[in-house]
Image (tube, rainbow, N blue to C red; front, side, top):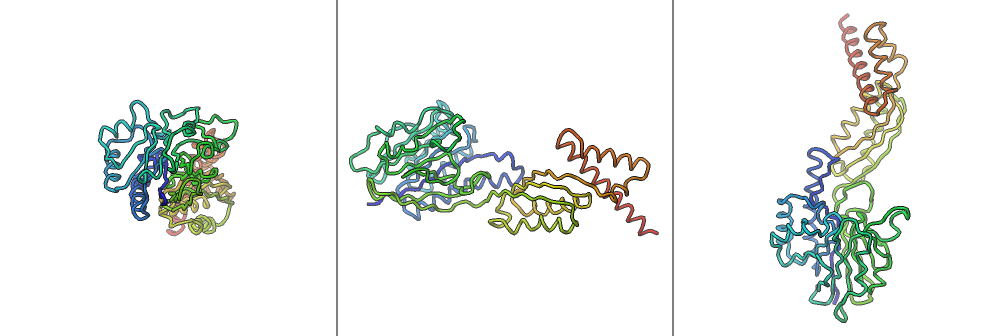
Length: 384
């Protein structure tokens, strides 16, 4: 009889999203709870024997008590069997998020794999061999004990671990929590469920990273899935179905601008919405701006960026545009007196200040000075 599991990992409940301030960060934090609720519904709909969570259930050891209570309430009400594995963000320390959770008395349907003892599932037709992390940065392979871990005769062997499979990081880097690429073969595993990598990946035969069920960064395009795994028996190849669960898309874009008519500059930024993989409100975008603009163009760019940012869940700008006023713009500010001297000083600051922040302040001040001068000039012309 087929054993059916949902493999997920890297929930990172309580992730602060410090780089995303305000309401947008709050929405993304709440979404991480919502996706767990959706995983629970999926587990019921697919009638799985267990949900295996391969580490980093929580973003840190210091998440709030209210979040622990919400998590337990959600999992208890969901029913079914949940096996939670400590990862590197929530390692099983002597005092940890897991000891705090234990003091709350989790229901019997929620098992925290604090040790390596085999955990039977599916009425004993399968056994889960967990490899919890007791240290955030260990140099030993946490899965080594699976090679000799006992299991009942005829039972399907499922490994559950959190770490870095060899070859996924550059050889020059120190690898913490390393996992042998051939661990499934060495340990006679029918499936090895892994966490740590936030993108879905079959990294070796019978060996998969599920990735995080809700994308949380720009690195992995294949994030936002859980894996439905069906195992027909020992040595039978597992059937894997990635199921999309992500709602928010993290998108990187680069735009190189040159001095153009303001309307054309604005149109190029407005056009970025057309290439998004989902509705703008479901996108977090990192936009790199390169090139140069004049004073009038800078104003058009900023207005278009404000519109884009209002439409997106969040806009992260890396603005390296160089301000290049036209001769006419500079001439308009050069009155031979204090105004001209101020404009020259700001222009020099925008070009030569020692830090990006100071140059940006100089450029902004020069643009505002030019806009105010143009407004006053237009008013004087209209009054004649």
